[in-house]
Image (cartoon, each protein chain N blue to C red):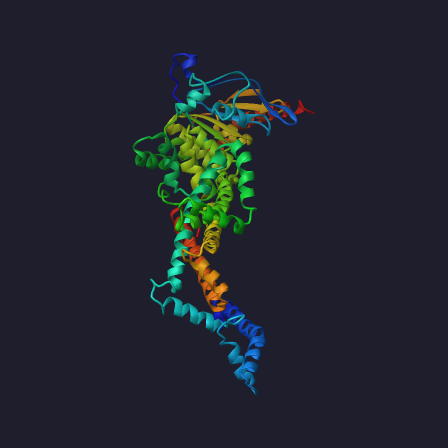
Amino acid sequence: MTELAPPSQDAMAVVRAQNLGLTFSTNDGDVIALSDVNLTINKGEFVSFIGPSGCGKTTFLRTIADLEQPTSGTLTVNGTTPSDARLNRAYGYVFQAPALYPWRTIAQNVALPLEIMGLADKAERIARTLELVNLTGFENKYPWQLSGGMQQRASIARALSFDADLLLMDEPFGALDEIVRDHLNSELLKLWARTRKTIAFVTHSIPEAVYLSTKIVVMSPRPGRVTDIIESDLPAERPLDIRETPEFLRLAARVRDGLRAGHSYEE
Amino acid sequence: MQQLLAGKTAPILIVLLAIGLFWYAAAIWMNAPWQTTLNQRAGLENVSATEFIGQTWSQDKPVLPAPHQVAGEIWNATVGTDIASKRSLAYHASITLSATLLGFALGTLLGIGLAVVIVHNDASERSLMPWIIASQTIPILAIAPMVVVGLGAVGVTGLLPKALISMYLSFFPVVVGMVKGLRTPEAIQLDLMHTYSATPWQVFSKLRWPASIPFLFASMKVGVAISLIGAVVGELSNNAGGGLGVRLLTGSYNGQTIQIWAALFIAAALAAVLVIAVGAAEKLANRAMGVRA
């Protein structure tokens, strides 16, 4: 990243959470999904959320997307409420599963948000985003004709097609095998470098979090909270074998420690 | 031969042959007592076994007509008769078919409409569903005359009363199927729509409706067959308008068993054609929606 002097801290903040809390009321009593989360995601950052299941990492992503409502604290997205940000098409969301509509071809799936938002130049946007995820030539295939990794790439193209500056990704590669996942991780970094998007990325894989991120948010469960925020000092250019370097291993160890500290809390 | 047995043709032919043999045997057994009486009255003695069997297969009003008698009647009453004549089975079949199709169309629309309301409003599921289910527990034979007579009293006769009975039967599988079908979209598919700030209409037209299409066709296959039953039952209540139901009714008044069986077979064939037509429409829809062949 080229270091330009930021105009002000506020203008840089894409997501800002202050004392954010979210409690689900269930039949078995209240579940504290998020407790006192303070976090800022700045423009152009690649932020990973890592933690065991139940730590609230997905819930936090869903609150940014206005899919869940916080019960305390404040959360702003692009300086507005999550709901206004959603109406302003501030973000594209990539789910754990591709969630492609099986009756639509890949091009038609990518066109879905464009149709709903009434955006023009569909053909150009489809071609451009499919090219970004290396799916040119698969426009007229149906989802079942593609492998799992290709389907997830198509869903990323769908999230990029309407040019939102923020990309929210909820364990997008969690269901894929490690070889495909490595490949998609390096492709995602290239995509991030080309598009300069802000990316919030939920994962449960330490190497994935360290490899991708400029900032790693370590979370722990019961109640879901942030235990550590690690700024990565890895270079922007990251070949896959960076994962064998001492810097990488040191970061991974710190993440692992953070996770362990969160766990010992409950025992 | 090997090829025939491996395919579908041979098993189908074997079953058809077995049914035919059983039917001819049953015709001998069921028609024999009356034939014996007839022969005694006519003073015929020493009728050989083959001659007697031939007689049981060619009575005017047999208890059970033989297959070739039914086939002959179907041939004579369709190809052999002017289509505009009231004796033509094709004429009666066309009356039943129009009531069936109108009722099926109305029933499918009503079923889809109710399902849409139910899926979008929890209160309506609790308030409507019990009535929808109760409607199907009432014997249609009890309702049909009331509908036909009641509408006749206010001057509505002909196609519409019968179509309404068809509708009454065929909307049910469509409601049940479509409520299920419109609810098939997964949570993340709906969440996706929410992230796009899609309107309820967009969620319906771009997600719920296409997702429910397989359920619609499954429901319509059941619906179209019972639509035909509805139309025939409606015709039983009013023998003025014609139709296959009327042929069944007059056949049973006059002991014309051959006529009854011919009308039954035409009705069954009609139902089969309708179900096949829905199946063909389903194939076309599947192709357009990229369903894996």
